[in-house]
Image (tube, rainbow, N blue to C red; front, side):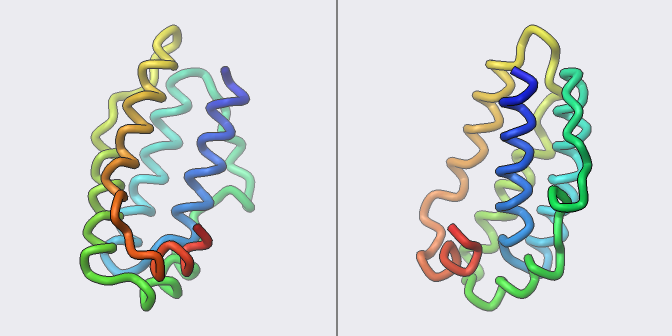
Length: 119
């Protein structure tokens, strides 16, 4: 389970590292920090390695390809992640389900924005 949680952190960091910009990047940066704390509550070490950290510059560079609606959706994703409860040992699967549900908020992001984000 710990390896799976670490994998989730790495995947989210890739999304956040290449997502969008402006307030959405600020929101995603805050969500990334909050996510590290929430996952560590399950006893999972996210590693904190440099390659797994949020790159706000990359995020902001991708902003030009994202519409205001795209940015709103990414900010909604960030808000959802920040609002998640801390993961609890023994309840990892339920927490992962809640975490996964946050990504429903990104449905409808434009193909141009997704391509700029590497998606």
